[in-house]
Structure formats: C-alpha cells, structure tokens
Image 1 (spheres, helix red, strand yellow):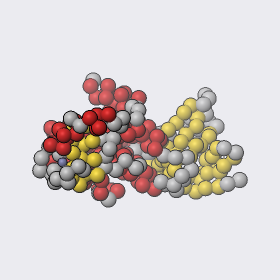
Image 2 (cartoon, rainbow, N blue to C red):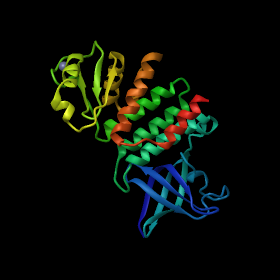
Image 3 (cartoon, rainbow, N blue to C red):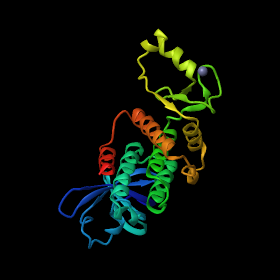
Image 4 (cartoon, rainbow, N blue to C red):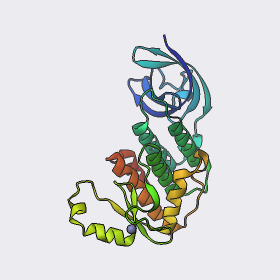
Length: 263
Ligand SMILES: [Zn+2]
C-alpha cells in the first residue's frame, strides 16, 4: 500500500453519505489529491478538524485503489477568521474553486500551493487589505503562473513605452497596445477577420504598474502594492476579465460572492 506524508489544504468537500465525504487536498508535491473518508463529516471524528474546508494540516495518507485515506493528521491552521465573515467566506470559496480548476491530480505544483496559502492567509488575517485588491491580484497572478503571462513591456505593435498613458490590454493575445495602434488595428480588415476573441480593456498607468508588479513579485509579496479607490475598481475589472476569458467560463462561487457583496 502506497504511503505519503504531505502538507495539504482542503480545497473542496463533497458529502457522500450521512457522515461520509470526499475531500480534495491541494499539495505542493502532488497537486490535487482525492481523499475518501468514512465518518469524516462527523464532528466526533478523530480527523474532523483536519478534513474541514480550508484546513491546513500535515497528513499521513495511504492509498487503496484509486483513493487516498487519512491514516493520521496533524492540524496546522484552519483560517478560522474566514468563517466569521460571510463576504470573506464566499470569496475564499471562489478562490478554492479557481484553485481546483488549475490544480492537476498528482502533478507537482509548488507555486500554486504557495499562491493559495498566501492568498487565504491574507484574506483571513490582513484586515486592511481591500478585497478587490486581493481578489484581482490572486486572479492575475494565477493566470500568469498557469501559462497566460501577458507581455506588459510596451506596445506590442510599435514598441512604444506606454507607462505614462492609458493603453489597452489585448486579453486573448496577452499583449499591450498603444492608443494609435489600437485604432489602426480596429480598422484593419485582417485583424477583424481573425477569429481570436477580441477582448480589449483600457488600462491606466497605475493599473499597468500594479499588473507589472504582480507578474514579477516574489510569492509572499504579490499583494504589496497600493491603488486608490477608482484605480482599484478598474484593476478589479481587468484582472477578473483576464482570468475568466482565459479559463473560458465563469464560476458559480464568484456570482454568489458578488451577490453577497451587493446586499
Ligand atoms: Zn503602438
């Protein structure tokens, strides 16, 4: 029987019976792992604390056929603060749904583990960090790490430095356009005939600076930037559209989070 000792975060739980559930662990060494558990839903279960959503523990796992089972667990943290605030809780659910989408079964992805833990940690513990900033930075960094890193150096067509002016993010081509190149492209029959989706979003100099920062920031620093309120709303729109258009679908947890925020 295969055994594995690993630090993992519960990113999904699905009830499978009265007291039984399947949980999905995110790990750095093995990506996503499916854990089957009899009685795991019962609060009296020995590993109940370590099998709740957002629980972070060291697990000793054993594999029988397709699924892993918990043979032992040493609880580290459960980001308890997330449970006291419905906005934070629903944002955390969205974060986990996005992570689930990108994590691959049994494939190492330490960067993804680190991004997930750092994001949930900041959401739970950093009171003064605006949610729009946290969500946007997470979405954009996720896209960058998972293979959709845009080239933000300058205008991709003419090479012009656009740091000091409004420019356009050409989402599906992962590039920047200056104002005149955008106008020229929009009147170019060859560009119009091209079947790639044309998602062009305006970015301000401050938002561009934030995106550039997130692209290259060390894992623990990707949230360490500041934008004023107006810029933050634009930033949030840019990041959400960037990620969702590359994933090519929406997330029900994001819709739910937005509904919650409106109340
Ligand atoms: Zn240009």
